[in-house]
Image (cartoon, rainbow, N blue to C red; front, side, top):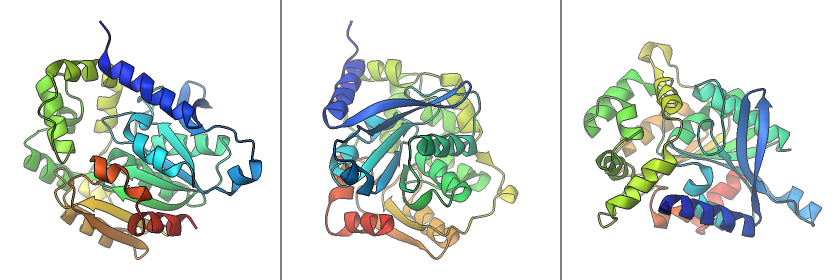
Length: 301
C-alpha cells in the first residue's frame, strides 16, 4: 500500500528541485555524512554570490526540507537558502551525538559548500544547535533568528517544561511510537491541532518520519545539562527571538529570560500564534513586510 507521507515527501522534494533547490551530500569525516538542500548552480554567477546566505535548521519532528518548505519558497529569490538534515534526520548519518557535534558538522559542511558567512534560523532543537554554532564559529554565524528554543536544556528547564506538559522524559514527547503519542506531540507542538486527520495518515507519518529511533533518543539524552554546569553565553551576533505567546513547550516567559541572558545585541519579538513557526500564517513570516523580513534583512546586512 502507498504511504501518503512518503508520497508527500517526494512531491515536496520535486517541488524544491523545480524551484532551484537541490540535495547535496557532504562528507564531514569518514562515517559522517550530512545532507543539505542547496541553491542549484546559477548561470548568473555574480547574482549568486551577491545573495546573503540563510541557513534554516529544523526541529526534532521533521527533516529539513519538509519543515521549511514555505520559508524556502518565500526566501529563495532574495537569499541563498541552505537547509541541512541534521545528523540522524533525513539522509544524514553519523556516529556521535550532541548539539556540539551537530554544530561542528553543520559548520564544516557549510564551509565545504563555500559558505563563509550566514544567518542561522533555528526552530526548537534547531535553535539549540544554532546557539552552539554561533558560540563555536562566530566568524561563520553573522546573526541568528531563533524561535521556540533555549540555549540548553538545563535540569530546571526540563523539570518545569515536562511537568507542564505532563511527561516524564523528552523522548516520550519527541519520539512517539503510537498514533495517540503522535497526536500528543502535534497538540504540544502546534497552535491548532487538525483533529479531522484520519489515523492512517498518522500511521504513515510514524513509519516514514521516525527512523534512527535509538540514535535520536540518545540525541535527546545528550541535551541534558546540570544547572551548575551551565553558564549563559554572551553572544556578539545580533539575535532576533521570534516567539509565540501560547507556546506550550517554552512559553514567552522563557523567551524573555533568554533575551536577558544572551546579551545586549538580542532583540525579542512576540507573535500571537502559539509556536511561531509552526502555523501556516507564521510559515510565511520571513517574507512579510515590513516587520519581520526587514529585521532579517538588517541582521544579514
